Amino acid sequence: MGFLKNLFGFMSKDLAIDLGTANTLVLVKGKGIVINEPSVVAVKVNKSGQEEILAVGQEAKEMIGKTPGTIKAIRPMKDGVIADFNTTEMMIEYFIKKINGGKKLASPRIVICVPYGLTQVERKAVKESALNAGARSVYLIEEPMAAAIGAGLPVREPNGNLVVDIGGGTTEIGVISLGGLVISKSIRVAGDKLDAAIVDYIKKKHNLLIGDRVAENLKIEIGTAIKLDEPLKTVVKGRDQVEGILTSVEITSEDIREAISDPLYQIAEALKSVLEQTPPDLAGDIVENGIVLTGGGALIRGIDKYLSEAVKLAVIPAEEPLLAVAKGTGAALEQIDLLHQTTFED
Image 1 (cartoon, rainbow, N blue to C red):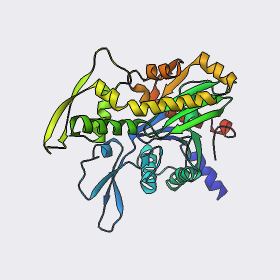
Image 2: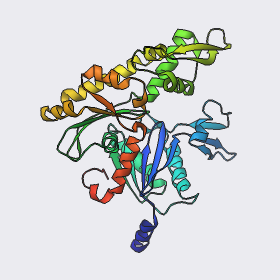
Image 3: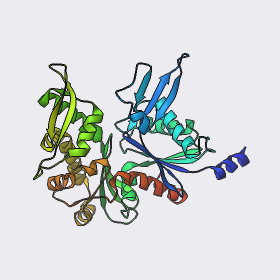
Image 4: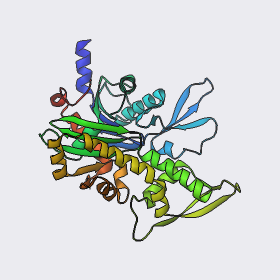
């Protein structure tokens, strides 16, 4: 059995997975990112009551809010944690098979990035999902560390570096020095909460009912954290909650700025809290180096200026903020044996 296990290990493709609330990215050792898809699974219940996968990723996301009663479009991750264990397992297994042309890989080692604030129960659920999907062994790396590595910060040096990763389900803030997290904070306020705030705002101000996908598109197209010299505008369609008729309304970037002001304030307050707890010597390094911003939230117009004004420090978006966590998880995978003792949690 030991010989077979070693043989399968030799044949397997080790993987790194950024299991995000909004998107899942999968990297193959030596190849980089091979999958970047929404974390959505569409399932159909057959006559025997069993769930069958209809679609995963982008194709499944297109079905959200449009499915008949026999089909469900599920986002198995919520606020950075597994909300639907079975569907998460199906999604991981599907992506693993997709990498190998529909065949099941021979028991890969998998590194999975997880939010800092996960409980032991939630961490166990992540590991079991990957093991049940066919992994030989599973290692967890915390999101602030992965984000810092992916952003190119010198995490193993005796210098303080601060990273803020605004993802889909959580915002992760971490002060890193000598390969470890000195101070870290995870709050469940991020992209999804911004989308929900936009839905609520448009409902209250314009009596218009829109879905989360429309809100996300508004955030991307005209979203801003600061007042713009020239406001952006777009027309959004939805249902008037008073009249019940389909209608359209012009929405401006000022609307979106007002809509997302409260969740952005919560992110700024969490950042202040981490800075207040940072040891003086490391704080001096952060004043000199600035704060690095990663995650999809880093793409919101003016968010670097918004946070910089809140904490009176330089805030610099990473070069590819959307890919930073995945790249950092992949970099850790490339050095899995070297970093095993300090970076990973078994």
